[in-house]
Image 1 (cartoon, helix red, strand yellow):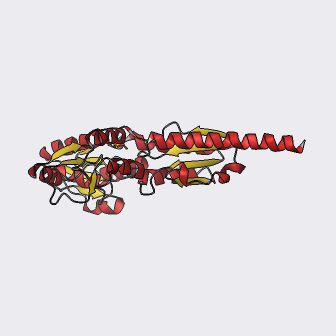
Image 2 (cartoon, helix red, strand yellow):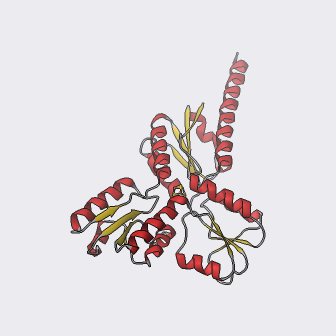
Amino acid sequence: MKVVLAKNAGFCGGVKRAVKLANENAGYGVCCLGDLVHNDFVVNELKSKGVKVVESIEGIKDSKVIIRSHGVHKSIRDKIKENNNEIIDCVCKKVSIIYDIVAENYKKGYNVIIIGNKDHPEVIGINSYCNDSALIVEDAKDLENLPEGKLIVVSQTTNNEENFKKLINLIKDISKDEVLVYNTICSATKNRQNSALELSKEVDVMIVLGGKKSSNTKKLFEVSKLNCKNVYLIESIKDFDYNILKKFNKIGITAGASTPDSVIKEAVSSMENFGNNEMMEAIESSFKRV
Ligand code: F3S
């Protein structure tokens, strides 16, 4: 049995930094505004160090507050500071760059268009850097409300490249004015999907490691299914019935951007050990037969 790990898998740079920063500042009296990442291992580790997960900053004073990698609305950030809290800023650099692009061009008189999901905290945060004036575009239907005048277009970092390009072309067709485009899609997501896609072509079974609530993990599951009939999404190798693997020769493993290295290493070594044990059992039983 051969176990192959996808070329790009697990923590992206932004999540790695966020987890490191949060752990360095973890302790009693520290709050995290929502789960740091969609991964129970990471969240539970911080909880065990005293970090409390809160859904709102109401009533939180004189504390340390962790802001997650995809950011928050500017008004929440202001409120955290007003209440004499210290911000542990885990916002990914790739997201804060979008804040700067939006703020700068909004000041110059551009109308802001964000291609992304209206309800996603990252999009809500970006929109706050142009006074919540952006048109948020999820699909072509939303372009009916495209404003007149010069436009600047940015994307949610986890967007799909094809969808972004398609919408940009439509915007350029409709608009009579200047359209300034910033492709702010993060390559980490795309690299993980491409690696999963490639690996799934050459293995008998794919194991996708990641939180059930993690959208990038779910995407890896879907992408893997395009080429491989046997795909399993699990949070940890502990949840998995190894017997399923008996009939397969080559196993591929990939992991979402919020899956820690420890979970990946445990899965790889457990499967390799399982493969070796299987081989030992087969050798032993063939000796018995002789
Ligand atoms: Fe940042 Fe990209 Fe990860 S935006 S949090 S490096 S997926």
